[in-house]
Every structure is written in structure tokens, then in C-alpha cells.
Image (tube, rainbow, N blue to C red; front, side, top):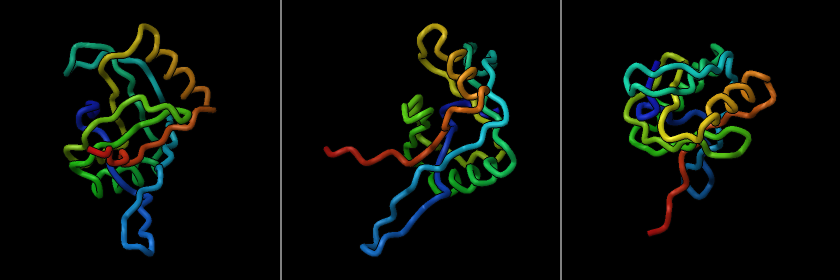
Length: 128
């Protein structure tokens, strides 16, 4: 398992004619979502285990975007925005941090039900 601080980076990268690299959101197929005790942070976390195809795409995405901040979204709502410090190759991530009571369980149930869209993308640059 990888902690949220070690989460995310880039696969569906498109180069536009103007020469700027823009990232399309990468949709992840989640095989299992569960609320578990995170041994590293001594708090509850949301463990997401991806399907083999999504794990490969996510590994490629993370390799391409080390050092960048990425948004992890569920049904279009950003639930985490970590800086990717290293590639994530195992197809499994742990989301932890400050969540409202019951929020992790609600997310796990939505994702497990199969209707939730889970995506990652490089966070848009914020103007200074």
C-alpha cells in the first residue's frame, strides 16, 4: 500500500499543436475499495486497488508526472491533491488525511457499487 503523500502522476498525455503538454484525466477502474486502518499514519484510510489494466496505466501516469501535484476525483469532486514524490507501480493507493466522519465509508460504498467515476489528472497551474 502507498500512502496518499506518495500518490499519483501521468498516462493519457496529449501534445497539442501549440507545443504545450496537456494532460487528459485518467479514468481508473477500481477492483476493490475499502476503509482500512493505515499503519503508517495511525488513522483510517481509503484503500483503492485497481484492475490490472488500470494499474499499468496508473504506473505509466505516475512515472511521467513525478514532482507534480495531481487531483484524484470521484464523480468529478476532488477528494485528494497530493504531490507525486515517486512512481506508484503496485496498482494500489491509500487515501488518508482529514475527512468528515463517514466520508471514507461513503466513498468506499460509492466506488464499490460500480457507478462512481474515479479519475486522476495533473492539477492545473494556479496563477500567482
